Length: 184
Image (cartoon, rainbow, N blue to C red; front, side):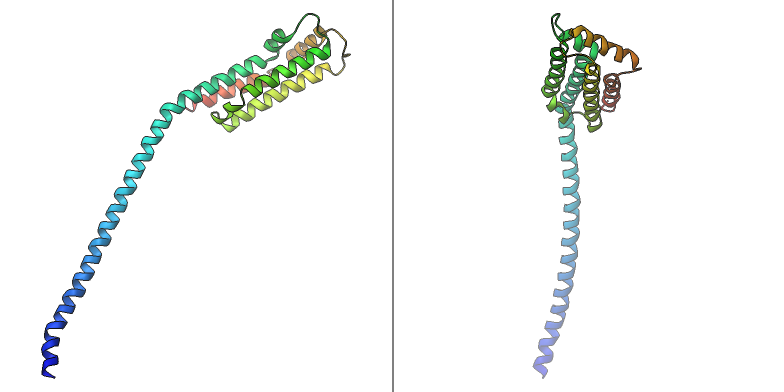
């Protein structure tokens, strides 16, 4: 029994020291791990910020160009520009109507990829302006005979434009201008 007490006399303090050292070491390692996690989070946030800044440096000119192209698209499909560009002297109503609708469709399809760089709201306004113009052309052609002179369709389109206070294309251009101001 005396031997057991002798062994206990040395082992119990050793166990107490070991347990104390274990818990202190564990606390220290946990604290160090938390510090490392915070530093890592800070580094990740700094990298994200740098990446965002780099993206802006390259993406802003592309976005600006997309807005410019969409304003050009709207100007090109405005009735005044479109009719004068597409109309030919000997065209019939059905030929002019088809040519106008094709020109709108071609311009739209040529600029489809720009929707990646402009806001969803701007793209919605563009599509609405395009559809409004298609409807305006189709409505102007409704009462005309297909073999009438294309000038009659042009007159009807311009009369419809005069009757409107502001075309949808003009609203869309204003919206694009306001939208681009948000970038700067």
